[in-house]
Length: 175
Length: 378
Image 1 (spheres, rainbow over the protein chains, first blue to last red):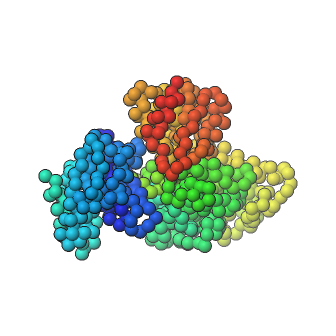
Image 2 (image 1 turned 90 degrees about the horizontal axis):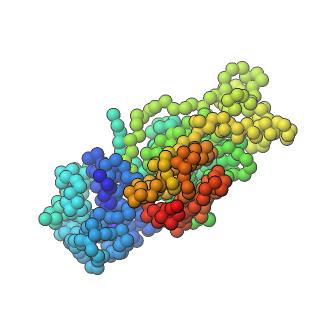
Image 3 (image 1 turned 135 degrees about the vertical axis):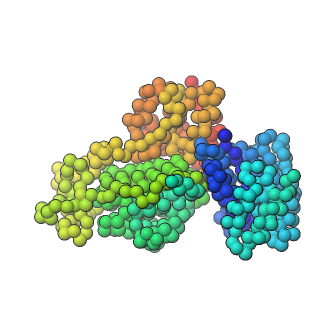
């Protein structure tokens, strides 16, 4: 299998790196090799933030992204930051509310209500987990019960239920 | 049973050090190496070791040397200007033959540079940063797994040969998280040879066949003297030309004598390469991907990757070039051209050597290398 590249992007504080770490851990548990890199600005909130996964069966030669298969964008700050890494095979998932002007090109773009769904669940800060659910379902890279266990294990007790609801809401966005 | 886990490059250096038996770390955290200190602070107390955050890089290097003189396996970690600050004490460790390991997660410069961006700007400083002719070993891992295993080897070499060993990684490898199989924990590792036998007439820097004198452990009763001044076999300073030359030649000759232990390199598709790429770290990972793609379009590219960067695996490189009948060399590196100088020196005009350089804070990509190889392809 050639490698599959996934990027979580947005602004600092949105939990992008957390979501990427959960997915990476779940994929590793399934026997995949994952290279995870991240980039953020020297501020605790705001600024461009991203985390990339390069998923392969036996270790990627080059561990950084060169052509994204899946791109998640949760903030307008990141709307066009990855344009050079997209091609006709890419699939882009953007937050409908925070990314009003998603990238345009010959790739597929899905505008989905991550933030709005999180807010309706009671805390807009779980938008990252809603998005993770959607991304997991869209990619088919990981079985629903596996990612569910990974989110459960990564959540502090008091957020477990909320995070699992968020994950499920995200999974249900993909028909 | 495997213990496969996701591990960060900097974390791998720390966990490798603990596995190797490191029980002392002194440091002054600095981006992009800080996670090494963070991990050591968390892990060392669990194994009865000691972590000290010192007031600066100079003091932390001094503390590491002191701990090692006391008999412990000791390490520090740093980046950029911190590596510059440690140089004087690294020279002391090299001259007085105090084992120690220094992790340097390279940061571009000059001065404060770009703290969070990748660079390979210390290829020359890691070899020549401290003054005078001196022995030093530099290991250059290109993956997280290799960072773990090469840090263990750094301790083995340092203790066996009484020489500072630098683990040189770039920010991409340092902050990358990869799936690693660290193998069995609690393996036997190389222990320093401590002095034994009669204390009477003991010479702490005796010139033996091995060229590595046994280390007098404090408290074992051996009279010894340690100094940064050039010293004779007694350990006391000398300006006697014959004694000074013998002492200085011994400490560099010991690495030549034991080169079989030190030298390590890897190749990919090198046997029949027309264009041989020589690279380390993340630039070598980009070259691996580039070689595969270039071969698919019929360009005979190959990779030579020094794992031990210094002493440079010169016989190995020349052997690979000869065997392949290579027609050109390409040296991609995140600096304005450092490793290329060593490569040019070795091939001495026998074939063209081309550079590919980035100093913009971005890693060299497979596409960069593919484009450059197409330009220079014979």
